Length: 129
Image (cartoon, rainbow, N blue to C red):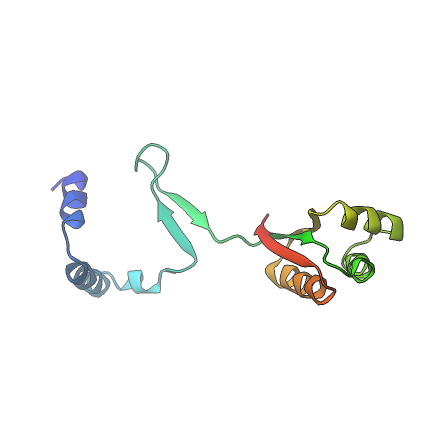
C-alpha cells in the first residue's frame, strides 16, 4: 500500500477508530509511547506535505508596555527596575508607549515583569520573541 493510500484511509477514520489505531500503534511500537506529544506540533511543510516542519513552543518572549495608565511616575520606576535605562530614557520610553521593555527573555522573567508593570498601573503584554 502506497503512503498516499494510507493517508487517504486515515482521513476516512472516525474519532473512535483513530483512537483505537493510536492504541494499537503504541502496542506494536512501544517507543511511540515515550515520544513527547504536547511540546511540538507537526505541520505540513510548504511543499504540501513533502517534508514535515516542526513548530516548537517559543522559549523567548518580549514584554511590551502597551498603556501607561494614570500613574506615570510609578510606571517609570517599574521600567527602571526592569531595565538598565536611566531616568530620562525610561521617561521617554514610557511616554512613547507601546515599547518593548524586555527583549528575548524567558517566560518567567516576562511574567514577573508584566506583574510589576501592572502593579504600577500600566498595561503590558507578553509576545513570543
